[in-house]
Amino acid sequence: MMITGKTRLAGVVGQPIGHSLSPILHNAWLKAADIDGIYAPFALAEARFEAFIEGLRGGSVSGLNVTLPFKIRALAVADQVRDRARLAGAANVLVFQDDGTILADNTDGLGLILAFSSQAPGFNPQAGPVAIIGAGGGAQGAAAAFLEAGCPEVRLLNRTFDKAEQVANSLGKGAQAWTLAEAGSALHEVIAVINATSAGLLGAGLNLPLEVTPPDAVIMDMTYKPLITPLLSQAVSLGRRTVDGLEMLIGQARPSFAAFFGQDPPEEVDVRRLALDALEAGS
Ligand code: NDP
Image (tube, rainbow, N blue to C red; front, side):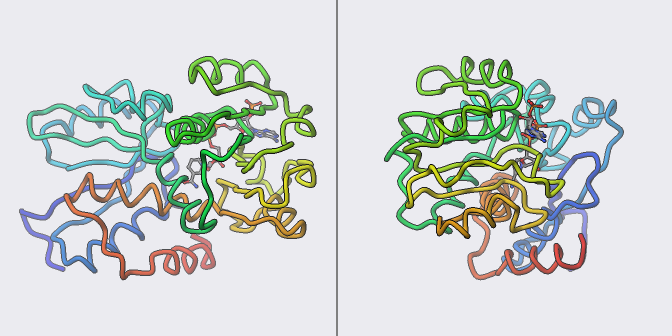
């Protein structure tokens, strides 16, 4: 594709950013939809985030995905904040509007719900309580999305109980704080367990007593490196359905693409295959 003065530009900002799969997803969609646009990675020194964002006001870049460690600061730089981003306490999307203002959104929660729809067909978030392990940005976004989808009760289990309590208080009705040590009780009668900790990243796993969950409970892990985490392996060995973090990543990217390029991404591209290839190649 020829890059011209009219090419629309979007991207992802984080530190580090070299491992990000987002450029692979978005550029594959741009190519398939024949859109004159590119999606670029931006690595920043941590202190430069606000200055960088300020400089983009006015639409020279149509929008950015925001990833670690900037998701909370992304809320503060915005002039308008979508309700779901406010509830999640973090933004993964910034849209630069022509009038110079910045809109913050959070599509992680929607990505999570889309991942359940595609990998656990028939799953109904309204059917019972959900357990979310963790109390960081990912956990808060997931809890907000499930509450918004009509889930009657979200149980937040965290190693540091105070953090779970803070998040539960900020979410309000329907959210409860538990300690990780209470997992044996908290995982009873849940319809889903979602790992939103970074514990799986090291391959150490969490040693959750998944055997107390009902046989039709769905087990999800936000970590996608490795794709099959120790938690998901444990779930499979117990015969539970599973949802992986890569499907959530793809799920959050779809509405991000629409926000940056003004149309839904084309369905026909197998972006999951492309992302899996990149993961296998060590991206
Ligand atoms: P944060 O750093 O905000 O939160 C990390 C959480 O993990 C905290 O609750 C922390 O507990 C807990 N934790 C860390 N290590 C351990 C451990 N050894 N045992 C138990 N708990 C532990 O991270 P995020 O919420 O932003 O992200 C969490 C994970 O989700 C990351 O792996 C991230 O990559 C992934 N993620 C994936 C997405 C996707 O699209 N697939 C989207 C968003 C996030 P404590 O409070 O006690 O420190």
